[in-house]
Image (cartoon, rainbow, N blue to C red; front, top):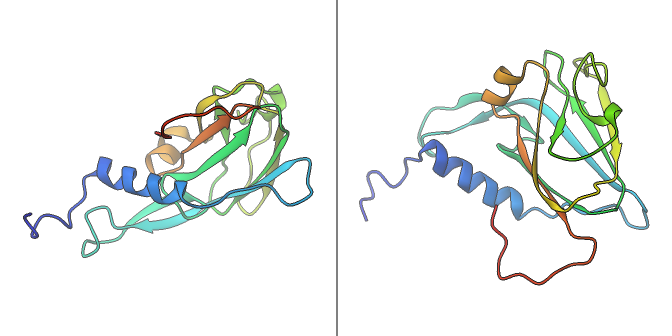
Length: 168
């Protein structure tokens, strides 16, 4: 192994490592709640994209994780996700590929007002389909996505099925 270059990460390697770390975090509903409740906070963050000794790069993150935390939901189980805006500009969250009520689609000025800096918005929906999806902003999308605001959203089947391993 060449130890001189083993500390350098490619962007793809960094994202893969961050995804693995995020997947290990338990994100479960509150006890006794019929609704799966979550919170995502969009805020400035820092990342060392070239390894531990490299410079910090200003980024934006959901809940201080790039990519954002993997959200695991259950098909047919209602979810309530409160998005807190810690950015200095408006944001929203679009739940890409999920069939949901129009008012929860995250398109600023069309399906909801933008989430102003310091404010929050609560999305409530019941995922009808199992599958692999993603979430991201629809306010100033290219800038906010480019700075790190995106995450995986997994909707598990209503009845769990057996599988060999989980790949995201």
